[in-house]
Length: 189
Image (spheres, rainbow, N blue to C red):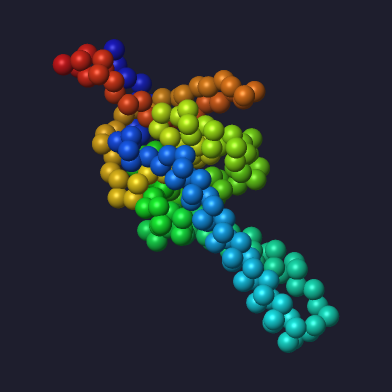
């Protein structure tokens, strides 16, 4: 029986290469602390600057705009770069696409915005990690990304198929590589 390859091929990794729940929670905590520190630094910096220039001016809109830009810079370009965020660096993780490549800025922006505007929250996202065979969060499933050990290389490529799930009031469908099973290997021999 021929395989449907209309969605292309996707990479898969050793199970130990995927980041588990505890590492993901640790990354979230570390990166949240870093972002809070950045926000605190912005508040102090803007307060000092505007106390010197004009003490009657309220720079709160500048703070929020600056903090949003800093959050995006930290969670999108930095996270996908070889330098990675502090949490990813300390826990030796990196983010890749399901094709085994570095994700684009648009994919990373979409992934970040899914917590703000998507149908998932942080609790659903983390709970999904425990049930997912590739240890992907819901955001990762829809963005087409994996969080893997730094330096991990794919052990193979398989046809992408549309995975469908029903649960928690959601009907989900997203592309995922279908790892070959021992039955698949036996059929090709």
